[in-house]
Amino acid sequence: MRNLINNKAFNILCALLLALSVGMLAGCEQEGPAEEAGEEIDEAVEEAGDDMEEAAEEVEDEVDDATGGG
Image 1: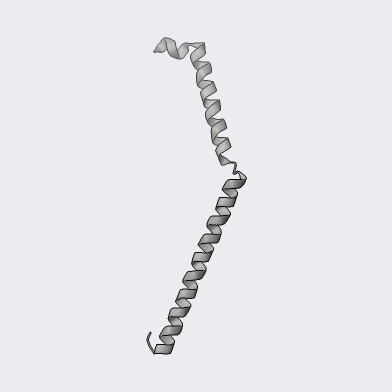
Image 2 (image 1 turned 60 degrees about the vertical axis):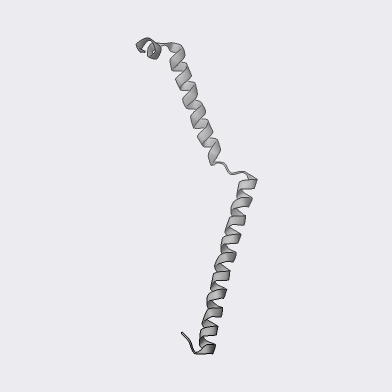
């Protein structure tokens, strides 16, 4: 094992693997147009869901007011 760690080829291989790992991580942070579009769709769906919840609460309040419940 000691000879392997001192081996120049092993050191070069480790440096290469480290460089590739860092490069892959850097590439993962960049968003492509499809990912950006997906995020915009997610936000739009979430906003629509929030609007529907608010509308349902308003209808419920109106029904409660009309029927004397509440």
